[in-house]
Amino acid sequence: MECTVSWTGASGTRSGMGFVAETGSGHVLAMDGAVDEARPENGGQNLAPRPMEAVLAGTGACSAYDVVLILKRGRHDVRGCSVRLTTERAKVDPKVFLRIHMHFSVQGRGIPDAAVERAIALSHEKFCSASIMLGKTAEITTSYKLEGV
Image (tube, rainbow, N blue to C red):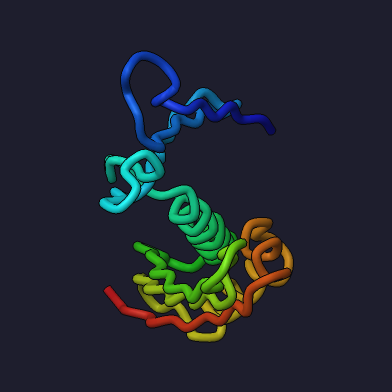
């Protein structure tokens, strides 16, 4: 796996803290910093997610991917899945994630609670590289809501 990240303010008179990541799979992801009124040269333009938001989003997608795949492989009629992630970060640099809570909303027909619980557990214990990696510095908790359709 590879990725090239380039600062978008490196040429001309543009300033700011915007970056574009070009992934090995040929996709592009923009990232930017927050506007810093006190020190504009250190801030971004708030045009894209922050890098740590991208880490969080990737973790959520990784885990939701696993949950859906595990439920489908179990021949469950899964119709939707989303996950809301909330975090607490360290107050001083490096501002790592200290706590991450992942709340899954799973929609489907006739899916037993035990299957959703198992899928979430398998994701966090075995399959989701992102959450397992972040679990080295952060306490990760989960919850879910199962909705029949």
